[in-house]
Amino acid sequence: MKIWMKGAGAALVTLSSLGVLTATSQAALGDVVASVPALPHISPANSSQHSLRFEQASTDEISEAIEALSRQAQLKEDALAKLAIELEQRHEQFEDTQQAAIYTRQGILAALPVDSYRVSSSFGHRQIFGKAQFHKGIDLAAPLGAPVYATGPGVVTLAGWVGGYGQLVEINHGAGLVSRYGHNSRLHVRVGDRVGVRQRIADVGCTGRCTGPHVHYEVIKNGQQIDPSIHLAMANR
View 1 (cartoon, rainbow, N blue to C red):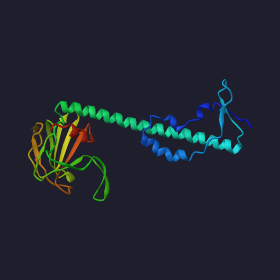
View 2: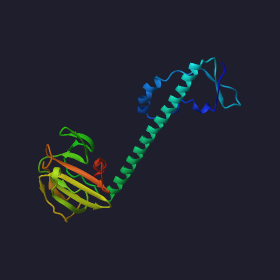
View 3: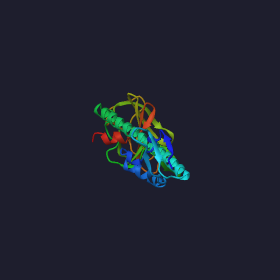
View 4: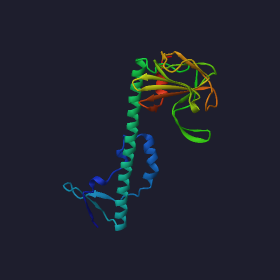
């Protein structure tokens, strides 16, 4: 029994062609691939034709093979889409790192907000007080009363009590960059003050929505909170 499938030569795909995928991506697809039925024997009609033929295959086997081809094609499409997302994320991380390095060389966000600390809560989604929330900064646990420093030169735009932040200091560094320092026990600056890098602006506290002494440190770029971790990693020590 010979059945011709015009133009189907390009439809037969295997995941082995996705060598550029990460090991994690391939592992995640393993279970799905295992469920794809085996294809009946397929061979070229001849060297001059762009078509395939099934050798001694029943109608049901042919239907199964067509479905398998379709599923494998979808798997490849999904895997490539996932890879594209991963590559885009890595590209964004690379650009963020490059920009952070430039700021550090310029003395912007080039210092640590507190000398001795432990990261008690990272940037991003988290559970707090039993609720899922997006954490817009990073929490740096530090001794009560320890100095809090400006991470770069700028102008103080907020200095006082702001809701869950408690005693908050906000500094505009220019170039669309703003830093915030929350939960302080005492403030050493006022709105309108010009501050320099490593200038003491507050003392570590636990004011506002707080479970222990720490600095809630935020970095805002063009009105959007970004992960401060890159800047902390590159800060001068």
